[in-house]
Figure 1 (tube, one colour):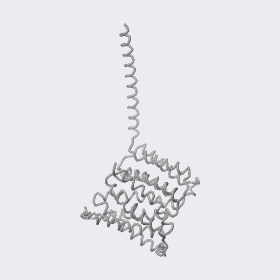
Figure 2 (cartoon, rainbow, N blue to C red):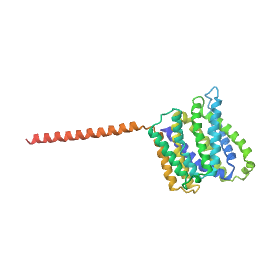
Figure 3 (cartoon, rainbow, N blue to C red):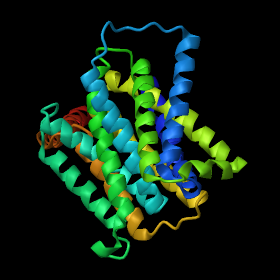
Figure 4 (cartoon, rainbow, N blue to C red):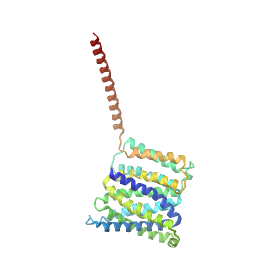
Length: 326
């Protein structure tokens, strides 16, 4: 229970981080600010490791998987997320992020981590319909923004990264892993920014104190602290199970979008969000229709036995009452 509560806290910070990133990329080039945010986060984790005097628990770093984790969890995920959030609304971003647990559950089935059931398939279908309804505000494919596609790529990369990290954390300390992939990823993203965002570095001189504190929050709380905790819990709880909590992320991102960004949440988006949540609960709960039918049958059998018992007791009482009268 304690682990789950900690995960909920992480998802709350990640939810509001969607809004923080939206604010940041509105004032500074998205790739540049993302690289700096991740670099500051990596420095914070290194300081935490040094203050804890935490020793390395690995003899040799599995670099092949570390590079893959860095590529998906940091470079592709954060690059796509920053570009996507800049090009779409915070509400749409939050809704698409809610598709993450369904993707995780689907991967669990593909890689035979958990078997598919009719109920899980229904969950995937509901979640997909929910995302389509939520994003298609105007009822046509033309209403999908390019940013929506970028955000979807970001969440897909994150889920792939979760499975890779789950494999690595059995071989090395999650905090050391987080520090390594954030450092390498931030350097790669900075190089990408220097190539594709000409003159972006000069925008840093125009950052006001409001953007500065948003940057500090996003770097230290959701990215440094949140990512570290999440990577630690992946190995304890499992990749599919930890991904389920991304829905809390979605809910608080929607709340933040309405409060801080003054974005309107349309009725169709609310219905779509409800379908996503139902789909995730159904698709990742591990329930089986056979078990449900058995449970219903058992309950009916128990009620039938209770009725017979009550009738027998009533008949017995009536007989005893007649005997007493005689």
